[in-house]
Image (cartoon, rainbow, N blue to C red):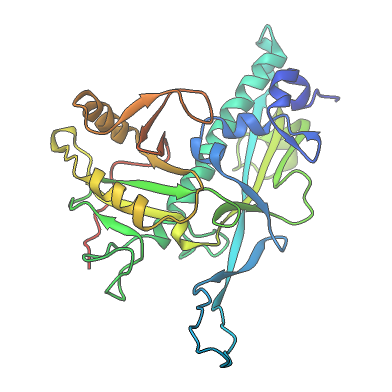
Amino acid sequence: MSELDLGSRYNLIDCLKNVQDNKFVPWAETLTENSPFLFDLQMEVASGILSNQGSREVSLPTPQIIKVGEGHVSSTVRWDNFTENISIFKDRVAIPLDVYNLKPDKIAYRAKIEDRHMAGFGQGVTNHFFYGTSVATPEKFDGLDVRYSVPDSTDPTNPSSASADPFVFDAGGTGSDTMSVWMIQQDIDKFSGITPINDPQMGIDKVDSGLVYAATNSSYTAVDSRAERQELRTELSFKIGLNIADQRAVARVRNIESAVSDLDPSFLQLIFQAEEEVFKGAGQIFAYIPKRMMTFLKIMAEAKQNVVYDTNNIYGIPLHRIGNILLRSEDALNTTEDAVAAV
């Protein structure tokens, strides 16, 4: 049975939003538009099929002061090697044929169902970027929560404790109802997503499987008694990973009490400290925050506490900002994080 592919169900305006290697990627926008984090994320081609190897510069060369006529030695730069994994995310759209045939506009109905799957797909990928871990499942890449977890009680930019993670600031909250602000400088040389090498679709794959038979009761094993139905299937796949080439591209302010009644604007001081002391270069800093935090900031804006609401930004859409930091409300971030004590 011949089926219209997804690209033919979107108009030219949708298609023009995403171009890769001079080719339209007609469904990528639907995949990412519901996640500000993925919308901002810059993508880099990995060095391998399911991993990326690189090196981080951890010390700069140092000049010498010499007397006239004396010799000098070569300075050296220290590099640390690292490997980042790429995970394969999968989803399947299955629409019963009987349901499909009842719809007056069948193509629009199928496109709407696929859009819902894509929105959930993007949200699941984003959630893994923040909270994913490879501890129990090696094929998963480690998200940000694993890498930037334990705050330092004295100087997060230069932790005094070996148990602390750099660039994690403590807002002092306790219990299991706290939240975090993630500050990220998106740049290929700093923080980026990675997709497999030699993949023209940048890790994104969609296959319209057409009309198939699917079992509806797995307890039937005999072919002549197995209950089946006909359904339309679309297979979705996304191969993506996280690449942090410069650890100073990320800062976390965690342990912020999430109850509105516990609003403490002092976390702004930590955001300002991180902006000035962690990040290097002129790249734009984005702050990804849970929706509850946006409520906090609107309350603080009403009280004129250093939060501005405007449309003067690179997207031309309304955004909150703190100074030069653009704020992005992210569904994947939750307000029930377990507080981690500073060390």
